[in-house]
Image: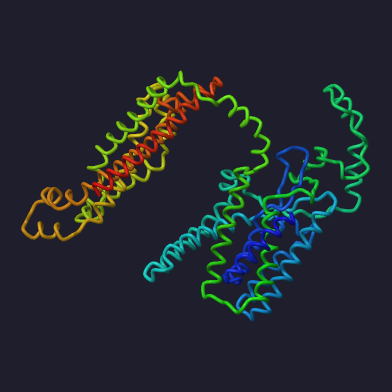
Length: 535
């Protein structure tokens, strides 16, 4: 974990060498520590079954290890003094970073322990209500006319959501939300000895079961170090909470973040001591934005199980794949060419059908053409809503639906692509219409021209080249999409790749990959050239 602290230190030093404001890094690190204290898992506590496992935050661990409050105190302290004298702030940054680092290292060297659970009822419900209030109030904060109405609406909805989530109806819909956030409390002296004794008492029966499964027998326990989980009767008690085995040496995704920010505090503080005074008005807002980005990215990396070690472990398969894929099999060129042609035709027909429907719909979705009366405003709202809904359903999902409806083959791909592309093209077409020069329109309206004549002589000449450009660009995208939807049975080169991958014919599959690279580049260059001539 010290490597993360060194990384944070290096980031601070490098940004300091280019005279970047270190105050914003201190703000970002402090806010990140506060967020991690409340929201990011730092260790693991296990029960008898996988569903008993908890990933407590530093706040959740603060009763079992009160020194974790140093993390919160350090972040708040630096924020409180970030506008003060540069030397003082630098010293505070170094001390805060060292304090966080020492506490985190000390925690990881603690031994396993038995803890009990204390739910914080109403916390998640209150946070949900506050979030709803903040989102709604923030929508109108910059508009004086909307500020107070939205504040009132946000307060009503926030309080209402808090009340509903705490009600019996809310608990019935979201049963896991009740008491979701839990504190881990120390257990009375002797609890660990009771758990060890209980385990040893049942060890004979357990070893008989293991012997029947061909597993090695377990030795009696003398401490919690070799205990990987608790007996079920300890983890499941009558109150529904039970005990947990807290493992300080385990790590959550908040662990590297806290070490990283500790190093950044130390580095930024040191750079403040050595650099010339530098303060920007946007230090706090920039630091806050950086902290929010980090707070969004860290859980995202954890949720996607991002781990480069898995890539290293999978290297033998990649090496075997490359050995079997090269050299390519030239005997499959004819079939690849046929499937590639089908893929191009899927994209071509899908784009054509989408443009055919998107052009008239785009005029109904253009704000400058539909604000004349309530009926047209309703049509505008409905058309835009259709575009938003259609764009929200991915082409791949539509392809799966149509493959089930009409069977395998390119027809399913054409339908999926056309339906999804209607919304994408309709949106950019309508935006092009909204940005036309109003001069020709007003001139025709001044001489009494009808609406159709205004569209024909004032709008179409301006938007036609843009429509063609957007359509060509959409065709580029649809060609790539048609490869992907082929993998789910919608025909074309994607379906060919799926078949060859399934049979292990990698030397034939790589021919298709080479063909895709060539055709993609040809289409891109041709489309770019055409658009440069037309737009």
